[in-house]
Length: 297
Image (cartoon, rainbow, N blue to C red; front, side, top):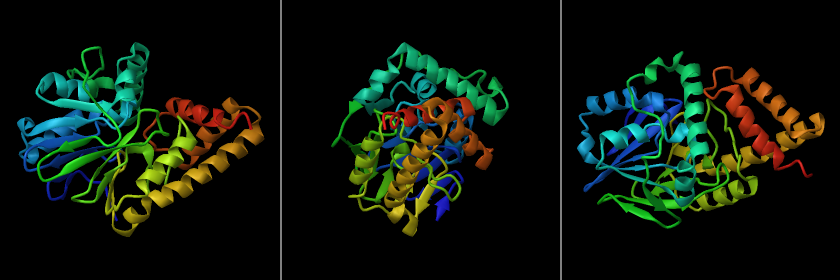
């Protein structure tokens, strides 16, 4: 079963944000944490949802960034500036990226592009101090790190492949996995794969995740998967990743160059999914990175 509407999805577990940009609140007996950080334009929605649930910012001690792409870090700058008590967590590689001026500029530009696509313009961001600058930093996580919320522990797994900085987190007490984009994106009834950093690492990361006992997948895009599908989700992600490599190789063989092959894949993507939230320009960048991994073949 798939759950995509924001609200309470379990005991002490909340889905916040919007269907295409999800943030999770995990409440423990001693502290609470936001897992993932979505797109900047969900800020008004998220704060309204917290207010509606009568959850105060004083109850939230941590925000965990699962990787440093613009659509997974958006709420961090505003919330850190408004909630200085909050601890920020990401992988060490994630903090390297988020301290790089060029990466910060690209993330801010991509945010504006998607805001215009999904919300009709940048006006929704007006009045919100949302952009990344050099005033945001935090604590590094690595394989085996653990955040203790009291009766729940958030375990960290390094899962590169989608990006070089990707981590996933797992809460054994509720058998919930938060893979971010280290596993497939559950768009409608599809399993969409983006391994812009390394397909080899992506498969190795899925092997790590396959060792976990999972009853709930909390995805960064398009919500929650439960039941039998959740138990099979990592395996299905592996199959989808293999299919993606086959499609990339075929496009490269047909078009003869990574750039032309990437354009072909993006065109096909939007013919099949015209309402997808990422802009064609951003998706082209991702496909070019994936295609180049097979160019030497």
